[in-house]
Amino acid sequence: MEKLSFPCYSHCMEITVQLPDDLAQHPDPGREALESLAIEGYRTGTLSHFQASQILGLSRIEFDGFLKARHIYDQAYGLADLEEDRETMRQLQAKGLLKA
Image (cartoon, rainbow, N blue to C red; front, side, top):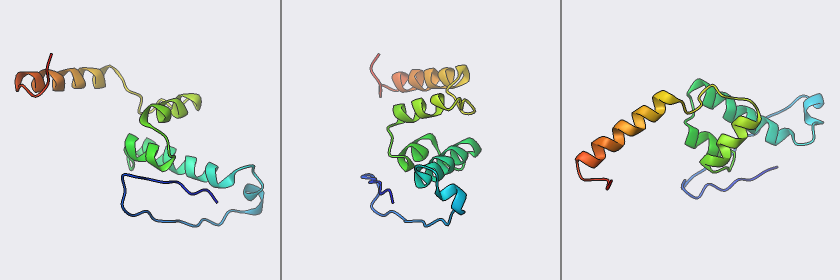
């Protein structure tokens, strides 16, 4: 059984899942189930990018690579995200909270 450490959380919950024998024969069925949970949670918006990456024990950048390797672009950072971030930066600069 895979145990992950989440240093930013003070409490973690352990979940047990019963898998059919054919799935249990996969090389790493626990990891497969965990990855499926993170992917689906992220796709549906139930989990944020950060939360899904934490479930898998990955950094945010590693999680982006994980998604890209599986051809998952549903929530990919796009032009609208860039423009939103640029506007946020302009607002923070205007308030003196971010140096140019």
